[in-house]
Image 1 (cartoon, rainbow, N blue to C red):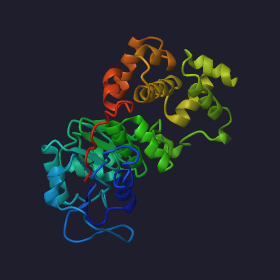
Image 2 (spheres, rainbow, N blue to C red):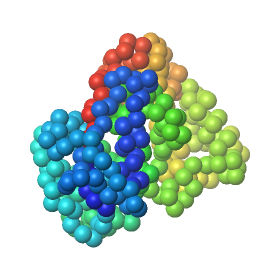
Image 3 (tube, one colour):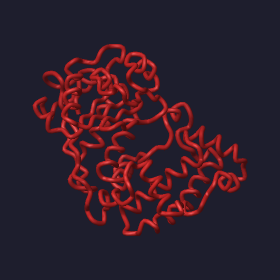
Length: 321
């Protein structure tokens, strides 16, 4: 992780908590995490903290992943030295993650040109105005475009970091890390959650009960009409509540739950693809393969070979600096 003076402490602390804590008891090898300060001596962060470097600029070429936390002030140009660090890392093929307004550093380095990217919704218009070659999407929690990942405001950095863990070690490991820091392993919806209820609570009436029931019955060929009938409400009401609360249509949310269940079964069981397709409600192996590849970016067979915990084939951890 690369830091410059004045960065906010939370955005810098998130990668430390996800990657910097030894979790080799969860999966081994875990990440080798280092902090590089762009400049000399301890790096002062807001409000009133100092980070000490654990590596130097000369160690950056060893990094598999570079993390850039938020900027001090999006109205000012990012420090040229930090921009150079990002540009050099990108040329080496390093995976790069920005948190919140850290996207401005990536944009200044030119590595977001022609890509989709996100940042805090408060700064999205400014990012799009200042860097018109970047396709800014202010509605999502994070975006992965090639080896570049950008995330939305503050807490969305946790979502993005857990996404990297999921890519490197699989959904089961990411879920375990999420449990240990007491956060959802994956939050559906986008930044609209921050101006609406993020997740349904007991005070939301029928929706939490419906979600719980649905997850327990993913093997069934459920439709929006089925969900409406289960809760004694209209189809239109179900569609509106899902969109308002989760940022997804009922069928989009249902599909993601099916894929997530399939990931878990692929990682933790030897169940054949046909059996997983049935257990997750896809009906046929062909349907499972099509939806899984579209959402996960890999076939179920490839995902199992990479992330199965039964054969200990989890890939080696990527270093984060």
